Every structure is written in C-alpha cells, then in structure tokens.
Length: 258
Image (tube, rainbow, N blue to C red; front, side, top):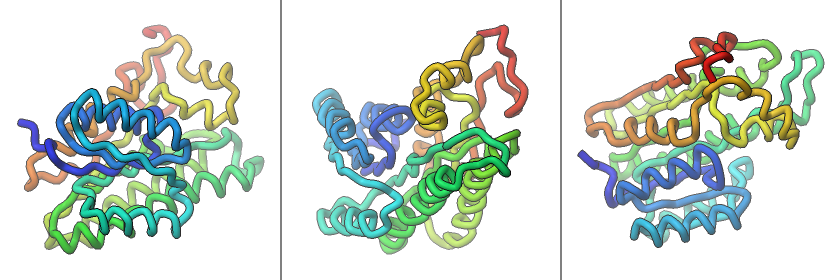
C-alpha cells in the first residue's frame, strides 16, 4: 500500500547521493518535494527533472543547515505557503578526515558538529512545532552505524552520529502523546560522495574505501527510508540499521566478495 502519495517531503542535502535518491523514490510514489542543499543548481535540476517525470510538485531551495537564521526563514516561508512538511528527512551530514583524536583538525570537527548535530537540530526545531500543531508528521534522520559502534580514527564523527541516535530516542520520548513519529535509518558502508568529502576531494583515496567489495548504494538506503516512511501511522520504526552483506561490523569487511 502506498501511503505517501500527496504528502510533502522536505529533504536536506538533496543535491546528490542518498538525498537525491530519496527524492526520486518519494517522487515515484507521488509525494511532493521540498529539496534543499547548498549546491542550488544541482538541486534545482533534480527538482525540475522529478516534477516532469512524475507529475509531482518539487521545489528547490539553497540552504546551509548550519545557518540557523536561514533555516528559520526557509521554514517560515514554507509555512506561509501552506507547505508544512508531512515528512522531514534530515539527510545533510558529512565526515571530514580520518585521524586519531590527538591529530584531528579542529576545522573538521567544527564542520561535522555544525552539520551533523546542530544543523539537524536547527531544522527539526523549526519544523517540529508545526507538526505538533497539526498533530501529524514524521521526522526521519539519516544516521550511521558509526552511531552504534566506534571505529579507529573516527572519534568525532562517531560522536556526532551517537548524538543523532540519542536525539532520535529522546525526541520520541518528548513527543509521547502526539501522533508524530521519529525514526533513524543508519547505513553501513555505502558508496556515495561521502568518502570524497571526508578526504577533501581525493577521489583515489575515496575509491579505495570501496575496493574489492560490494557496498550499499544510495538506492539501497532510499529503499529503506521508503519502508520506514510508508509504515502505517500507528507504527513507529525507531531505528533501522542497514549494512551490505559483505560487512557485519564497522571493522569487519569481506573484500574478496566484491
């Protein structure tokens, strides 16, 4: 059963990777899209393409989720236009660097904390009161297995994704008595632009992360997000952990099956 047709879905970081794949999957099911990203040209092209292909409304907006004033103004504009999201997909996030804590870059730390934690909080804080007023809505976070298990040289990224997991659980408690659901979809190894961002555009180093193996794709994760979002309204899927079959733990990978 398709329960998503006609709903408004706000997706952050929608210009590529998981965000773009989720936008396409929601559009295929007749949902209307509110797509935001810093790379506005890419998100505009995606919105136009999906609107034409699937006959849905799709609106693009240039947005940096780390700018709380911009986030507030964006959501205020949506409310004024009668487009309070039915689903908020907090997808914008990043990893930067792969270093031991004592060698880490403070700039990388700020970037990850500002995007993965504070950006998610700014967006959720702006949207949630309107969902509460209407007593309906679904907030879905793209977390990570890094929020369940730590791994070497990932301390601060781990910390941000543990924070996302804690916020998901705490938000569910805060929303007890409402019909609003909060879920987290937490992928393992997935081949997107993620590693290129982590390694500051070093494509060869990024490619080596996925060598000789079969990682998840953005489509795999979008498929999981749709499963969570399409659940009956009385069903709240708190957390969905998804890894490729060749991975059973962050540090355990079968690289001969790729």
